[in-house]
Amino acid sequence: MSEPHTEPGSAVPKGVRDASEWAWRFLLIAAALALFGFLIGHLSEIVVPIIVALLLAALLHPLFWRLDQHLPRGLAAAITVLGTLAVLSGLMTFVGSQFAEQLPDMTDQVGEGIDQIRTWIRDTFNVSDSQFSEYFQKAREALSNSSSDLGGTAAKFGLTATHVVAGFFISMFALFFFLLEGPHIWAWVVRLFPRSARARVASSGEIAWGQLKAFCKATILVAAVDATGIGIGAAILRVPFASGIALLVFLGAFVPVVGALMSGIVAVLLALVALGPVQALIMLGIVIAVQQIESHVLQPFLLGRAVRVHPLAVILSIAAGVIVWGIVGALIAVPVAAVVNAVGHHLLADDEPAPDKAEDLLPAGERAQVDGEVAAADARARQAAADDALGSE
Image (tube, rainbow, N blue to C red):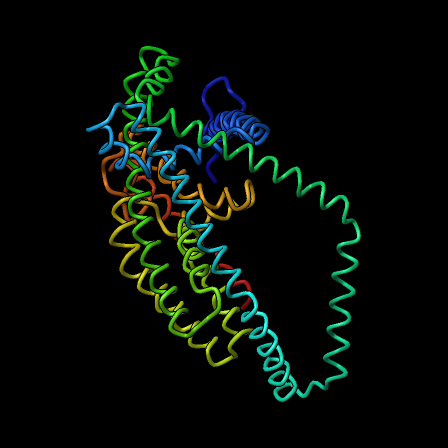
């Protein structure tokens, strides 16, 4: 049996020393990332609004660029920001008015729908009215017990609402200056780096900005198609609050893969409680059909070309974003992953396509050595199996 390879004058095998060198470097990198994550999390009330402002700047840059061709730069930036606020305010006002108009009818429909669901549950699962009332009372008691600390919950909600309002104004303020003086701000950031690294940093910024613009352009088209399809389906079925459903689907589609699906489920639930199981199943079919069109046509054609991130990486990024920053984290997870992926490929100068097997990355000599070691290990395993068979006889 061969001894582990050691260098002269060293009692530690070479493999152990190599592993230890990799280990302490990995621990150092992990510690730096953990410290960076801690600082980002500690300053989330500032970092999240800045990231949102960057996404909005990438989304609104084409409009700002057209205005900048005919107006002073400051006026073009102000009109872009104020116009965005006006559009958002108009949408919220429209949805609120629609909700106020449809609320009485929706209340009656929900009451009738709950009665239909109750009858269906009773006939299908043989649940009597007394058992149904008992289950309802237990759920009501559980909800009452969970809301016992109402004062603490209200305080937390007030604090969160304050952070949201403050973050909104920070985002709008940052958005204005990103549009107005974006190149100057980025030049100042580049000058913070050593001279030898400035060229790579500047080119990385250009690539990141291009990824953000491509992501926003593709996502808004996908969101518009999702909202139109599901909104028209809800309107045809006379689902209450159809305009609000369309807006919710449009906003939810900015979270790829899961956003539009989760907002479509809201439409299905509204159809269930307001119109009954049959209309709810039809609404579910509409949502699934729209999602299939998005997944097999729009996502590969638009997002697949704009943002080259594997679907598994998209799901894991969204999950990590939800864990770290909740809904906002889910919103920014995919563009952050796309930027990191593109900039990483640029900095590593990795222009070659990914190999089918990891062994293809090895030089010819090392690949032959690995193949020989694998063949020798297989031969030893077969010999050991044969010896065991002879011993058992």
